Image 1: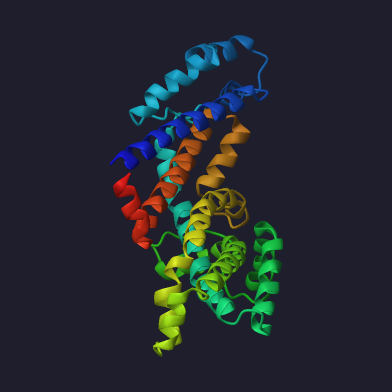
Image 2 (image 1 turned 90 degrees about the horizontal axis):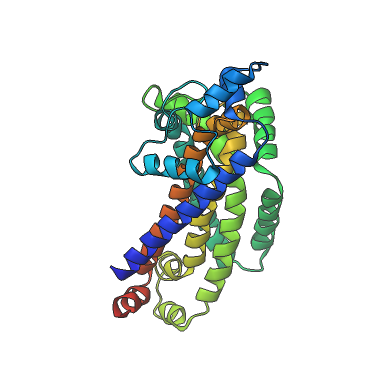
Length: 317
């Protein structure tokens, strides 16, 4: 319980720091939401009235404290541009982004884990070297470039999958899956390269352990040795990086959603930044920060499940 309380305290501190810095940086940008809300006008009085009405003339610490007090109760405010509650807009845009991140992570792990195991088992062979070369190639291509290439060849040239658009799963599951394959693959390609190389390195070291030699001496099948005895202790680095990369995937969706015309959090955030709609930007940052910290918290708990030594050490602490 002490460990959990410590992690929760860290969560609160991180969120306070991230939200305050974001709030400060947004307010230091030239221009303001009054221009987007009122429109381009020479009526300075109208702009001033808007600032006073929404408290934008107060010092930044006062504005932040007021926003934080409302955010604690779940009220993220209303958009300066369309007066729609920020929480409602984020909730409506969350499913496409969340689905895209989950699909990309699942796809990358489904490919990277067996590939990394095969590379470790066949270390320094032609297969290992060829796989490593392909992995470095995928890692060197930015996801937005890969997305454009996939749209051009797979969608426009071969006409296998749709180029743009998002269909909810509840509306048409088949069309939904087809529309998400290319965006998910664009995000997953770089992760596949990282995950497979990390797992390969750790598994090569694990396969040299004494207990693996004992299992081989007993005549245990190779597949069982690899997947049951070697995979779990070799997964710690992969698990950590996979959790951290969720934050990178969230950032990657901002561009990918633009390319594939997916109306998710990324598209909402980009629009809000150009409109100087500060409350939507702040609400989106809170969502991203909470997701990132919570995922890392869950990873720490999973460590104990993967390795009993960690669980016992925390119990003694």
